[in-house]
Image: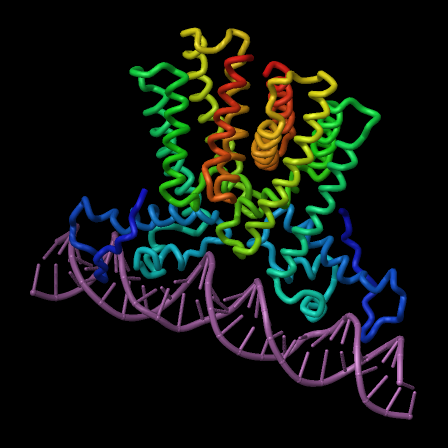
Length: 212
Length: 212
DNA sequence: TCAATATTAGACCGCTCGTCTAATTAAATG
DNA sequence: CATTTAATTAGACGAGCGGTCTAATATTGA
């Protein structure tokens, strides 16, 4: 998710190179993701995204009906990207389940650090500013969280079956608890420009699990 | 924090009634707090705040140097308001310390419900959109969180001394953990328009404390 | 060759934003 | 009282926004 380069921009109908045909659109999406994970929806202007990749406005409204539609697509893209990330970690049979969860935490932590704690979680960002957003986003954002909860819960259950955590743990609830708090930690990490909050929350969460 | 009424608005220098002299300014602050707790800083327009209380633009820039200065004052006001709230709950010697913490949670929960989960935490809101905010806010927002952590930690220590929670609990860390997660819970409550997240997080947090 | 299609270029409109100046009124001064 | 000074309101202003539109350009397919 790191694309600042501007495409070679030729006027008129482009030659038929299927791999390249989506390029401008793709650049817009990528730049949009970067912008929205940093600053959210409301304070990100179309022109700003356009400028990042050197695309004129006409192109934007050729590919997207509106800013709302653009945002909706970014949500989908981010959800897909994140689902893959979770799948990759949580489904990694070479590790014990609890270590898989930790691996995700470490990955996210490194990611935030890599971007100097400027970028957060798109879903969290949009959730926070929901009051100023198209109402149509709400259901989708909730659904994404629910998906993450499910994935997390499944991995917790695996940990339970392998005896890593007590039977008494309600995996479903613990997963919900994790994502609630994790988003708070991401918020704080951005504010403090430090991974302290991420680490402290994760550590606290896992410690609590084992003694539940 | 509930003021929609518009002031009687006469032109020119007002007669000398000390109690009323701050009225317009006060109305702006109150309306600003409402707006910012709902939608944050970036997506709240000055005009919008002005319209709520029927004050013309000229007045705003008479009382505040800029939107940035206005925001800074709102942060101070909110911090003061919240500190009082915490003081009131955490210092209530008629309850056991852990119940005082619960009382705050209940109070906050009721408050969010009362406003149909549209309003969140000003500090959390601004923290989230920090990337689009005057850099001068960062230190202040962090300091406010730190203050809240301290107050919470002191109450936890009291609980510890009364044997409500094990000696093994690191109160400082637990307090930091709480606020990290609580802000996440407020975010989710707004998104889901439900107090489910608040309750689930608080319950999980206190359950973890006792078994630590 | 030419119509249909895909894409870029960027002017333009209506609206809202934050700022600023002028007008208005009361207080203070003598 | 008359005049200056301070306090407040009124609303014009320019910049920038999101979104639309038409023209220009290039390729494809008939």
